[in-house]
Structures are given as structure tokens and as C-alpha cells.
Length: 123
Image 1: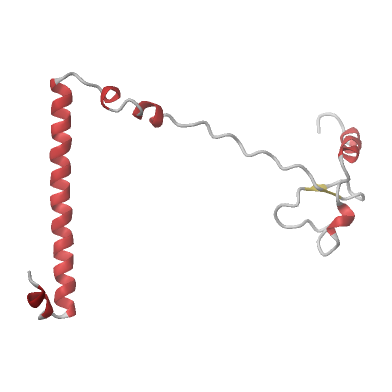
Image 2 (image 1 turned 60 degrees about the vertical axis):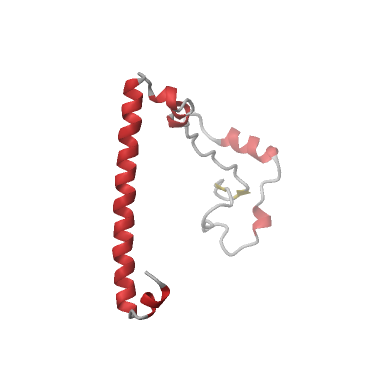
């Protein structure tokens, strides 16, 4: 269609034409895709080719990579009254909420060793 022909159409007619055109494009694209797949399969059968022959990297890419579990964050805050710890992630526990977090900071590994000694075996 020429610009003059499009100019005479209403918005509803233009939208309907676009829908019809989109549907036609999708149908032609689907037919072309199906024909290409059929041609590829025919050539693979004719020349006795496998998927690995045609796409050598596809087998490696198709393998799923191992998803490693999320590492547990180390504790950053310690409640001296209860012995509980908090990583600083998520909602603050009641024992630290509304207070200055720096008062509860774990000062290095010394306190971690002390905490480990206090934990009963098998806990």
C-alpha cells in the first residue's frame, strides 16, 4: 500500500491491518522455519551427520553446570547475653533491633573460638 492509501484509513482500520499483517508475518516465518528444519534434517540424513557434527559446541553447552550451594555468611554480630549471632543480613533480630550495632560487632576470631568452645558437641 502507498502512503496515500494508508492515510485514508481510520485508527481502528490501521490497527486491524497491523494485526492481520502480524499474523501473516508469523505464518510465513513459521512455514519458512519448518521448511529450513526439514531441509537440515534431510541433509543430515543424506550425509549421515549427527548434531555434534553440525554444532560441535552444542553438546558442551547443553550440559548443565553444577550449581553450587550458597555459602553461609559468617556471623558479624554477637549477643553476649544469649550467645546468639547474626550475619547482618535480613531482618535484625530482637536482641539487636533498635540498638547501636557496633556494640555487638564480633571483634575478630577470638570470640569465634570462644563461642565454638561453648557449643556442646553434636549441637
